[in-house]
Amino acid sequence: IRETLNGAAIIHYENGPYLPAKGVSKPISFANSGDTVIDNLASPGDFGMDSWAEGTYWIDIQVPRQGSMQAAVDTADRDPTESWKVSSVPPEPPVKKI
Image 1 (tube, rainbow, N blue to C red):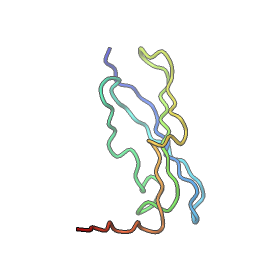
Image 2 (cartoon, rainbow, N blue to C red):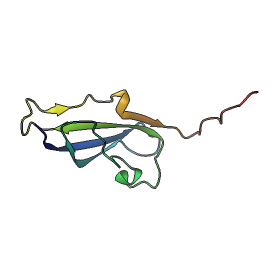
Image 3 (cartoon, rainbow, N blue to C red):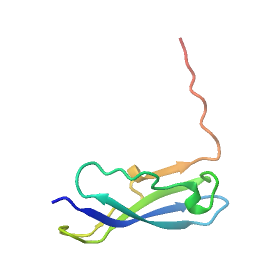
Image 4 (tube, one colour):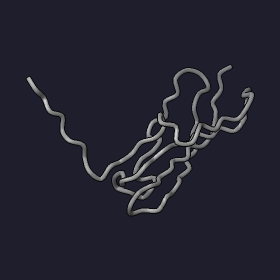
């Protein structure tokens, strides 16, 4: 059975030194089969930022039971595959040795 599912992506921001924690919910739609790619799922503009501020970000995907689904889906909070940190200090450039 091929269906289009609808849900929400909640993008969380926390641990920033200058801004309070915040979450932004965005509606999402995707096919229930094959690899799921959702373009532009999160951007700094979702938080009113011009660029990613220092802190920790993570995405929570919530899909209520619908169509032929047996149960609702709510991804684990702070899943490492759906999380990233932004540092105020850029990483050192790689050093190439010959």
